[in-house]
Length: 80
Image 1 (spheres, rainbow, N blue to C red):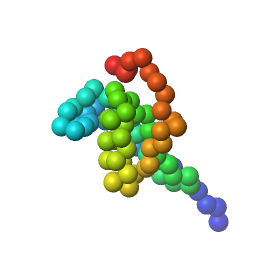
Image 2: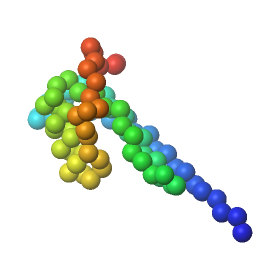
Image 3: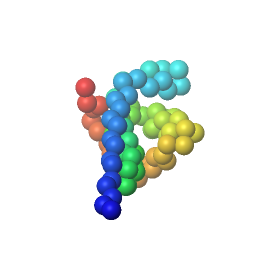
Image 4: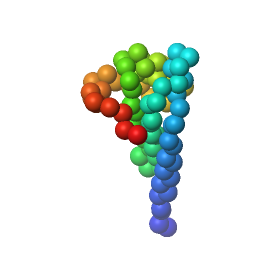
């Protein structure tokens, strides 16, 4: 009997975050992979460290992932 593996991938685009009562333009993407090697990939943008800290708390409270400051890169501007 042969076995087969099913991989499912979901892509989500987050067009709006609400950070401390403000809706900044910080487009983000999530890729959720289910199957043999499940994972959550992120592409997140922030205008400030405070926004990063707030989104970090949201994701941690939801049990999705823990953002790590060592992966932050300085960008001159957020992509449109």
